[in-house]
Image (tube, rainbow, N blue to C red; front, side, top):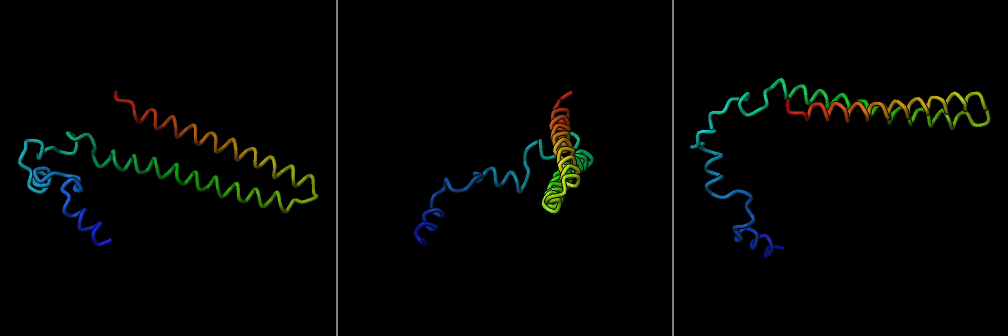
Amino acid sequence: MIAFFAYQLMNPSVFALSESELKEGIIPISSNAALSSTQSGLSLIDYLLGFARDSIFAVMALLAIGMFLFIGGRLVVARGNPEEFKKALQSFIYAAVGIFLVAFAYAIVRLVAGLDI
């Protein structure tokens, strides 16, 4: 195991960046070092909106999983009662349609956000 790590340290192809790229990252010497956030394409507002978008859809997915677990519990508890089973099954169908709509909305939002107008 020590030989493996020693070989990796001795082999120069292990490092992802060359020496000049490392120096460029630490001490910028080119003209692109003075780019502002708007020139580089992303500002703080863009970052926050993207984070909010992804967070909202993640919360929706967690809620959908919770609803499926809750409805599954209702289906189990309904046992021989056909009326309760029918209500739980209808709730399951509504939850399935809801998760489909959330997934469709996520795809549309990602598509529109990816357009370069």
